[in-house]
Amino acid sequence: MSVDNEIRRTLSEPAARQLANATKTHAQWGGITPRWLVRLLDWKPLEAGTFRVNKVDESKVIESLCGHEDESPLVSTFVDYQDAPREYRLGSINAVLNVHTRVSDLLSNPYDQVREQLRLLIESVKEKQESELLNNADYLE
Figure 1 (cartoon, rainbow, N blue to C red):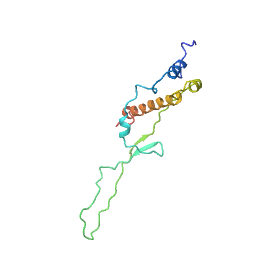
Figure 2: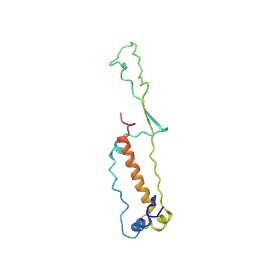
Figure 3: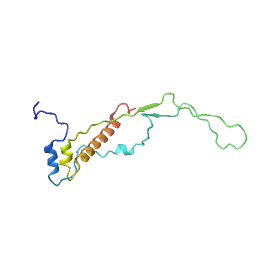
Figure 4: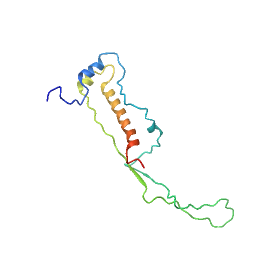
């Protein structure tokens, strides 16, 4: 396979050199969105990989009394839950970041190339997270 046809899996030396030899901004990616949805959701910590929504069975009436003043017996009741509540399985988003040591060692001034590559990768993962929340059929219902 010739060098021209080789599939690149890391930042090329010329690209890293371009970033290293001038006054510049942090690396930027045009695909970053405000990600308002993730901030608005009510997140729950998961101890296991499943989140179960335990809803009350709304077909059962919950008995109660108001203004009870004498010694007559109170009604007894209980709150019943759905037999088969909705469960959400925790999914994961994975990515691999490859950075040649020559890029990270030689061309990391003034910006740390590994840190910048990692920052943009994290932004990409957050974009994927929000996309999954909006578009994944397993979460919609």
